[in-house]
Image 1 (cartoon, one colour):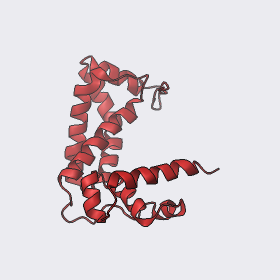
Image 2 (tube, rainbow, N blue to C red):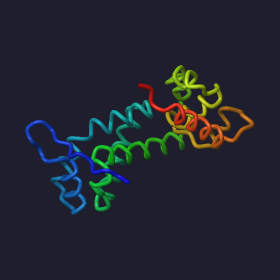
Image 3 (cartoon, rainbow, N blue to C red):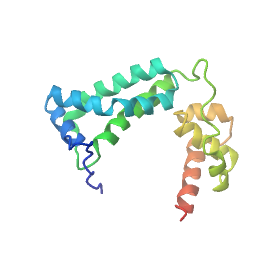
Length: 173
């Protein structure tokens, strides 16, 4: 069951982002322009972190906002905050772009060292940790993960086992 998102306000009592997104869904261009002004830097930051190419990040950020405009009538503020909703759209488009251009020209392999010590300390083996990193940070699909790892186990199995192990240890307090 989803919980109601807390409205996201900026200093000075600006209109909540959720309300702007709902108004955008009704065709309010000014509301969408304000939503864009308030979220564009966050969306661009996420996309740039994922694709590591400024020109591609600008294009993907524009695509994300175009899709947000088209999908705004379906937005339900009771399900997800406006920032998260918009970032989910941007991440999906960025990951799709990464998958289409894999391997990216002039870029190193996906961030395989990100969180490696954590994943290994959590009990994952090297192959499981790499599969999880390639899926999440690299945005690779299962077929490409299997090609990268050259493992006999299916990527789905590796990822599910890795996630199961992380869930089993739970948050440390």
